[in-house]
Image 1 (cartoon, one colour):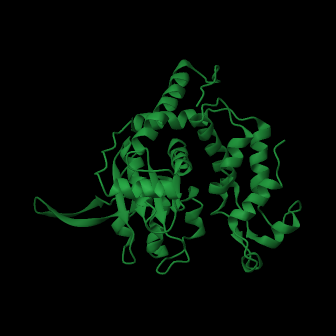
Image 2 (image 1 turned 90 degrees about the vertical axis):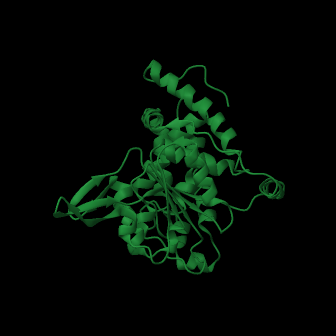
Image 3 (image 1 turned 180 degrees about the horizontal axis):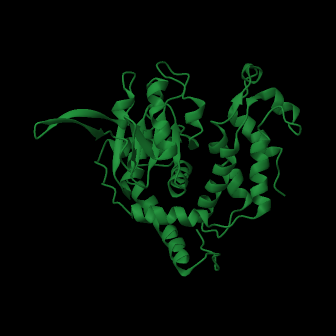
Length: 337
């Protein structure tokens, strides 16, 4: 990674933060290599979510180390960590907390007991194993960073991230996440099977030695400063316009929508998708040592931003089209030169 000779930052402290991110990324990759083999792109997308202050959904079949990945990333940050195992019998109060009756010097009173959501990093493990009523308990926490119980609002600690894992929807015993909750996630990151050599290394390493502990590299103050720097990364109006047009191209029924989009897509991405695309591109630019956002940053994040915000039509599904192929065609139809 090459650091640019001139960094367009607002102050000397911004330049120091920029250098800290570059050095920190290298150290972070070295620490994660203790437990995670491969998955470079997945790790980068997780870091983009964290550095931009957003939530991430990780999708993959069982046994692909989704939980291990999230736990390893959380360990690299000196933050309060909480894991919630989602099951069909999990209730909303099991996540947010509940009021209990206590005896205080002979007086009975209700006292709120915070649930596991009161932490900096929440691992919502197999979030689609629980019914929508319980899934929706995370909505307020993810969007408003607070929990309401018995008419009282309880703020969540800062920073606050939800890193959720899910199995593919078509697998038995799962519940599709509501669209409103899906839209709260910045990315939907796909974890696929490792190449043969990487899978062989995992098998040999995990059956012959105990993994080394991961050393924490950043604390909450660092993350808050990184998030502020991400928002100060400049982006040209033309590049931002490209992101907005790319998202708008997913919406059927509009005057400029192409015929194949009207045929293939029932519901397209909303305004939040464009916001997440630009914000994610700013974080990616920093991680790659660039002082401003470029077209390649927008295009590289189109899939994780859009794949959970596009609903294919029945005709498209019957023809065997996938969301990935639709996103690729959108990119092919939207050159940046």
